[in-house]
Image (cartoon, rainbow, N blue to C red; front, side):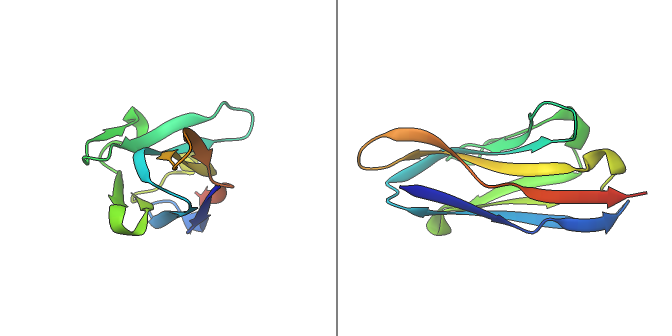
Length: 119
């Protein structure tokens, strides 16, 4: 069993910064691609950024140059540094990891953390 726990969301004014964290625990053998997704009210969940186990990153166009994804493999933890936040970044942010345990490889999701950016 694998659990992902997110932290770091909150309320911030436009132009401010937040840092999200997602820590994985459980019977983990290895973690492959990690990613952050977000879902705004009335919209579909969308990919924000992803990072492979060799550190290659990918960003959605709306966040390029403002958000930075990183990972600490020793801690099974992923981060999302969000700078120059805009009201349109308001959403519930979810972390996702593709994890291999001793039994199988599966996608796992965090519980979500609310990010609200006020204008």
